[in-house]
Amino acid sequence: MIPVILSGGSGSRLWPLSRKDKPKQFLNLFGDNTLFQDTLIRLDGLEGLQDPIVICNQEHRFMVAEQLQALGVDNADIVLEPFGRNTAPAIAISALQALQSNDDPMLLVLAADHVIKDVRAFHSAVISAREQALKGALVTFGIVPTSPNTGFGYIEASNKGSVSTVNAFVEKPDLLTAQKYLESGSHYWNSGMFLFKATAFLAELEKHSPAMLQACQLAFSSSEKDLDFIRLQESSFKDCPSDSVDYAMMEKTTKAVVVPLDAGWSDVGSWSSLWESTVQDVDGNVLKGDVLIDNVKDSYIHSENRLVSVLGLKDIIVVETADAVMVASKNVAQSVKEVVNLLQKKGRNEAHSHRLCYRPWGHYDCIDAGPRFQVKRITVNVGASLSLQMHHHRAEHWTVVSGTAKITCGDKVMLLSENESTYIPLGTIHRLENPGKVPLEIIEVQSGSYLGEDDIVRLDDDYDR
Image 1 (tube, rainbow, N blue to C red):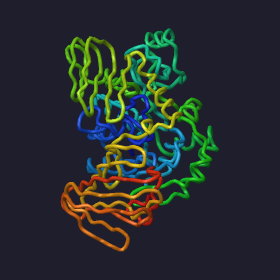
Image 2: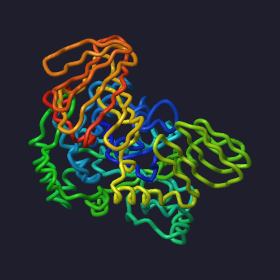
Image 3: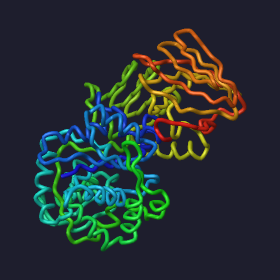
Image 4: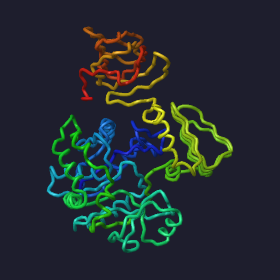
């Protein structure tokens, strides 16, 4: 059995913490580990597991690799999607990859951004699902509903409370219909988690969505190995139809089976669901960071950089980051996505990037910016280096705060230590490296007519960007 971790989501409903460049699955919302890491950790103890396959956006590849490495997972297959094409193509690609080294493995398909509190109940459900998958069934996990939730699709089972065939997949209902589903006992929330044999999935996909399978086969057969990653051919995958696995195949197949799952599941799809999934104090509050409150109840308040004080309010969400503050009533928390859409229309950087941006060599923080200048605090990991590059529109001043910097500037190569600085003229080929034993931190002052990240001409790069 091969775990397939789908990690392509953007998590825009958890803005401003979750953003396109670092979505919710890579955030540690519930402790020291991220949701992505927790997805892998909860598999510990299941028998017969092989190395996982991770499907992710190519922009997230280094975050995936680093978070796998932190868990000691060294042999995962990381497949990079050049474009998001929804879950059906992602699973098809995973099945094709799994069949490269196995006769006919089962695929345990999991989202990278879900919470499951009762791991033992989860394992029990997987074991039940495995029995069905071995018989050729396409198994989906149905979440036992705890409320008439209108934000989920539902699965109608042929029997109540047990493993059974699927009668229908149902769209997100209105409140009255959701209440009827809850009372029926034969309807489950659609979790988006599955278990089936790779060949069984591909056979049904060929029957119901042949054009999709053909595009996936072409993109996969022309894929290339890039460092630790598998890159799908961009031109072929671009032509692949975009569809969820439910629409593409599960709603049409006669082999769908649902296994009930009652394990404290949440898709953490909004701030209100994050509040519900987090341990609350006696007043029903969740407080993160430097927060002071008085007469506040049933609220989620998160501070990243500064003191946040809230007085005399109930049922609210307050989230503070370095570059944005979001305040909302809990009952409209699903509408946060509309703020992200508005930011995108206005071309605002806050829609997709944090002020603190992570790169494979380390990270940088934009401290200040104005007309024709920008100041960054850059941290370079031990042994890492930025690309050999040049800029058409800006010059840069570098001052070493701590550590040792090896700097290439034109024909010169120099070592700079704490409190030493240098100047990189516009158009000069340059590189920054950390040859030392501790992280390198520098202050970079950029000046010029254009300071965008796309004014980087890379001549050589350890990370093949």
